[in-house]
Image (cartoon, rainbow, N blue to C red; front, side, top):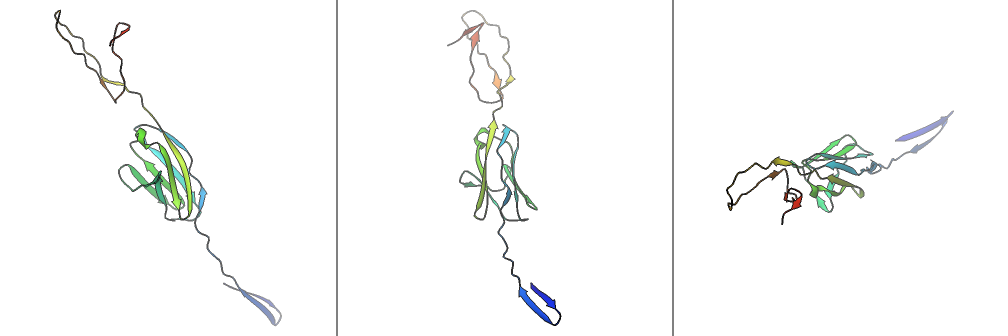
Length: 151
């Protein structure tokens, strides 16, 4: 805009041109830890509202899906990761023009639990018997008779 200074019948004028700064990160991403099967949210704050950002896991560009939700409200950018799996752990970044912020997601494994336990059996001598149990997820198991590990 134009500015003028007046002193009596004299005046001096000048013009001011403001160069807009590109949007940047006000607050960067922070490392996040979440449990397997849960949800993790990565968030950063921008210096300008509604600036377009791009989310990545490593070098892979992320797209909105049932797994990934991207929110941009005002100056707050969020990536929400649903149904966490161990493979979701890693480095995530948010890119804004030439600027980038990166943080790590750690996914804590849930322990395997018995979904269905073993059932008592009766058998005649020399007969074969099969014991079964079901776990909530794949995990190594050890079979024992009393305190002795079976081979």
